Image (cartoon, rainbow, N blue to C red; front, side, top):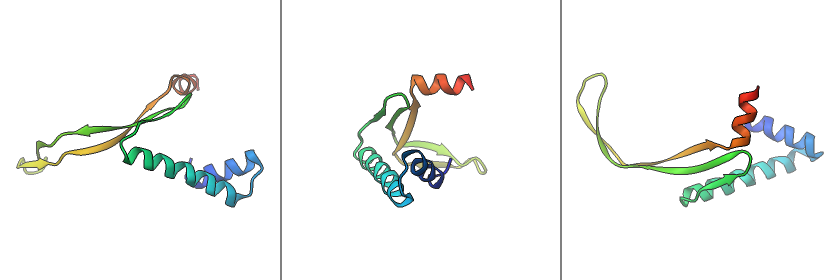
Length: 92
């Protein structure tokens, strides 16, 4: 499902104009982005949780040449599906 499909589905299910559904979806996504960028964990009961994993700097290798390269430290977003979502996906 794409973002535009999500907006259309929300508009249909909630009997909203598409513009209002667009604002609602974008607002939710912006709140999620802000929370994650601050390093907060986001938990959506019945769906799952989003969080940040910290990866420290390390030495890696270029797979083509085998030359050592320094990989910088980084923070990555991870998603862990909730129990209800896992069960629902497993059933189908």
